[in-house]
Length: 116
Image (cartoon, rainbow, N blue to C red; front, side, top):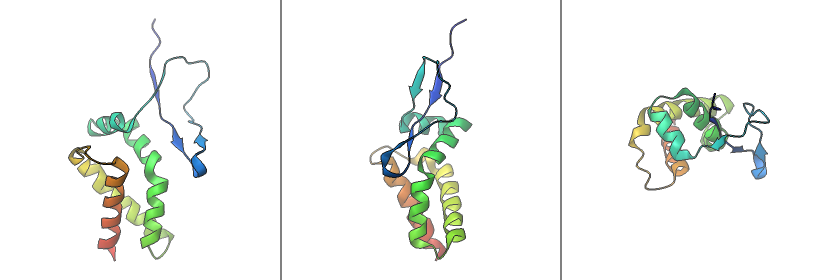
């Protein structure tokens, strides 16, 4: 029976230190690091793993953006949630011309500005 290909992603915490993926199991030889493009394609195809992975990859940095505009922690979390709902609904509109993270930040900033 052939081995199944396991998909993992790498995210980075503070100071660009790798964060261990909790799904990683030593000894598996067919590991593939998913790019943003692959995760976006999976998101559009409604793949739950890709959706969760993209959220986990960008949520902490986007929450930092929210904190710059919010009055408190709860407002920042609300802005992030509203922004991810917009991102979820508009993911197919991302054309790939510029930075994906820049596109996400633009949506977060616009969501924060509309809240206040």
